[in-house]
Amino acid sequence: MLMLDAETILHKLPFSTLVNELADKHLEPVGLTEDMLLESEDSEGNTNHFLIRAGWQAENAVGAKVTTIFPRNNNDDIWPSIQAVYVLFDGVNGTPIACLDGTALTYLKTATDSALGAKLLAQPDIKSMMMIGAGEMAFHLITAHCQLHPSINQVYIWNRSAEKAQALSQGELKQRFPEIEFSRIESINDYVSQVGLISCATASKDPLIPGKHLQPGTHVDLVGAFTADMREADDDCMRRARLFVDARETTINRIGEFIIPIANGIIEESDICADLFELCQNRHPGRQADDDITIYKNGGGGHLDLMVAQMLYEHNQSH
Image 1 (cartoon, rainbow, N blue to C red):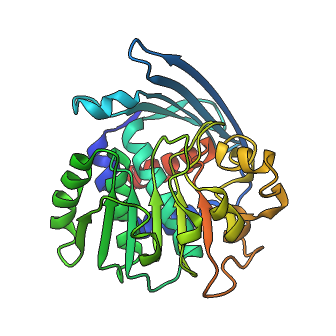
Image 2 (cartoon, one colour):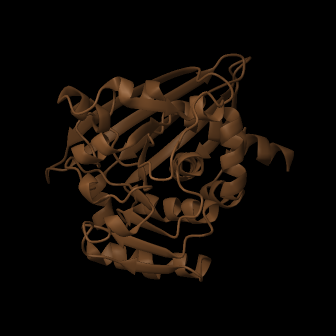
Image 3 (tube, rainbow, N blue to C red):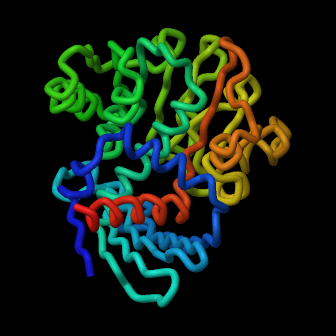
C-alpha cells in the first residue's frame, strides 16, 4: 500500500496542474458521498468536531477521510486545529491501495477547490486579495490564488488574533512571492471595497463579510463554514451576488451559509446558479458580466477528497 506523507502531498504538484486535473475529474458524475459529524464541548467551552467524509465512484475508487477539528489548537501552536488520515481503496476489488496524511490532503484539496472556483468565476486580472482568517489553511489558500492569478500584487490579511495575521504576512509567503506586498489589517470593512478577491477561512457563526461594501466585480471565496450554524457572508452578500457552490449535494442543505439565509427568506435554493460539475461541463457560463459579484462556497465534500487522493496516487505511482 502506498504511503503518502505531508511533504509529498504538499510539494509534489503545482496548483496549476492540480486545478486542471480537478476540472477534468468533474467531467464525471459526483458518485456517492456521505458525512458523519460528531460534536463535543471541552472543559473550556470549545466545540470540537469529529468528521468522517466518504466518497465512492463505482468501479473506480472509494475512500474516506477521518478528521478531528479542535479549534483551541490554534492558540497553542503545538498541534494544528485540523488533523486527519485518508484511506483510498480500489473501486473494483475493494483493496486498500493508499494511506495519505489527511491533514495535508485537506489543505491541498481545499486550496485547489477554491483556486478552481476562482479560475472559473473571478476576474482574470485581479490585482489584490484579502484573506480573512490566518489559521493553517490560509497559507495554502493564498498560495493557490496567487499562483493561479499572477496579476495579484497585494494581499491583505485579517485575523481575530492580530499576532497570527502578522506572522502569516511576514513569514514564508514573502519568500515564496517576493513581488507581492503582504499586509496585516485591523479592519475588514475598511478594505473590502479595495480588493478583487476575498477568501475567508474561519469557523465563525457570525457573518464577517459586509456585502454592502463589496465593489462590483469582486469574487468571494467562502471556505470556513462547514456546519448548519456557521456562515461567513452576511445577507447583503447573498442578495447582491451570483451564487455558486462546488457541489450542490454537499453544500446547500448542509451548511449555514445557505441554510440560514434560505430559512430567513433572503435567498431561495433556485438562486444558486451552478456547481463545479455544471461549470466544468460548460452547462453554465459562470460570470456573465465584469461587474458581477460572485460568491463561491467551497464545501469540500468527500467526492473532492476522493478526486484529489486519486490524482496524488496516480502521480506517485507513475513516478
